[in-house]
Amino acid sequence: MAETRKVIDCRQFPAEKPCSIAISGTEEEVISLAVLHASTVHGHADSPELREQIRSMLQDDGAASEAA
Image (tube, rainbow, N blue to C red; front, side, top):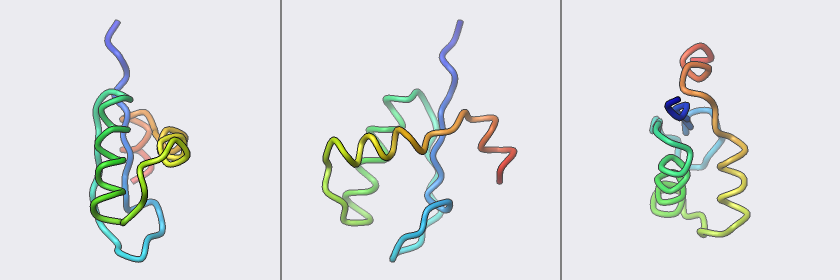
């Protein structure tokens, strides 16, 4: 069975610098790219805490489409 695609949408989270980035893929792909985005665009430090926070914000791809 194929792995469920995960998505995270930056528009759903308050930030000093608003953006419209949405990332989807496997859980590990999304976390890796979201950490890169959070550090380079929003100035967050790559840490285990950031990675866990991002992991907790992931949604199944279909659920995110319904919420938009």
